[in-house]
Length: 449
Image 1 (cartoon, rainbow, N blue to C red):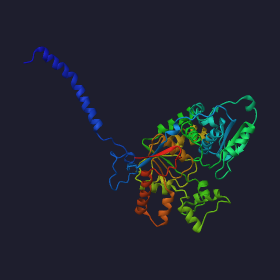
Image 2: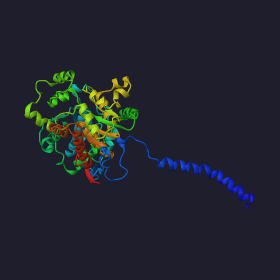
Image 3: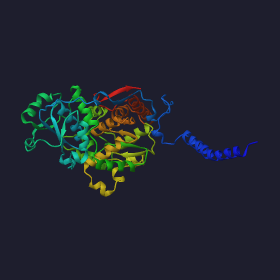
């Protein structure tokens, strides 16, 4: 028989424990229950191969992946004396500007020069007037390059009052030596503006120059606070989870490819012909077949939709279309993937109309880097930067659709389920081996899993 005191103690503590026990049980049920999420974004629960017959590309067990190398993330200080000042002049749209700037950062270190803030020279074609500071965070750029290359906002008055000596390397082809070609002008004039070569092998640079390229390109270039705030607003407006798709099928791009498309609408064929000009004749015969089989012809929106379905992308997937104006034949994609979102559909009309072209491109870049998955139909300057930055953040759901595989399989007569199976096999192999991203090997290292 319990005493009165013992009965009171038990009654009092049971009243306190019952809510706690109920809460613990509820939490256990919640945490133990499987979470619902679109199958496209799900990953396998173990590291075993996916079940036979699975058509979920992201569920395949990866055998290798790329990560930023550790060696370049420690600064290699430059000599205390400098050979002069160098300004990098960059041309084109945002992603071309960024490509030139990345190269220019490395050249500045190679020539042991002090770098002043770059100048964005945008051709009339881009209808663009924004400068470096209008897109990127200047203070972050200077801070992150410290110890790799010296960057300054201002120069001594005797230097700043004169125009820099122009050195344009854009038309240089093959490997050439910046030290032999550009350093004499830097030493003579003390202040030069440099437009880097469009294709220069970086694997021949000394280690400290490679490190400067990697740091400058992948850690130092950050959107300024105003642009980033607008990009975050856009990112938050997209239903989650979502896939960012960089789809390229504009008239000028198709015209430049010199590829023939017979199944397009008469309207699309007319605008392609208008963009073609006299020096972009359509290839015919064996030349056309070989060109297409090398993967030189852009995928149409309907071909893109077919490949995404072959890769197991559910048609109800939320898709952000990272693309500019003028896409042709888009209904071939949206008739299958209906949950599509764009900058213009998510931002206010006033916001969208006020933006420069570089700002719009920066929004696409930011959203694509931070998307749940990224797929591109063309591997241009934006795609190279997005895939690299996603790799920097450990985001591995990234895929470049193979135009070469699609062209070769269709040329062999494959269609329907056979073509879908062949495209699945080709992209699965690329994905599990971490291939197709074309990351700079001096900045990113392969890891076997």
